[in-house]
Image (cartoon, rainbow, N blue to C red; front, side, top):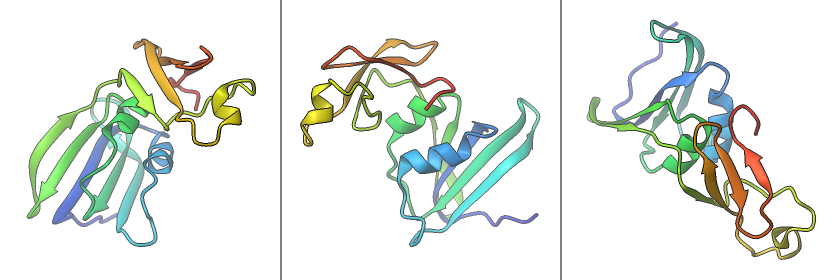
Length: 143
């Protein structure tokens, strides 16, 4: 299989095999107007298998979303066909409008314009607590 390199954009590498599709879904990138290469189950010396996402002409992505889903991934910023910056992701301390509160009594279920704000309570298990109702959501393996 041949996947061409990109001149400008981002490459999200070292994604745990099987999480690449979820990352694309959460990033909410316009797939109709951008060139995206999504490689599943590529060989990896470090992890055995991995997913890779290449997005042409898109550099500004929500790093909080990436850190929330796959903090072990690496984001490479590409310009003129060269890696100009590597970003190591971290589990974000606070996320807004990425996770939806599932508690039907939460104010975010009633008030349409209320932002869904979650605060990190356990980095290892990526558990977050809703700012309004204290509902806990685990982002490690369960989305």
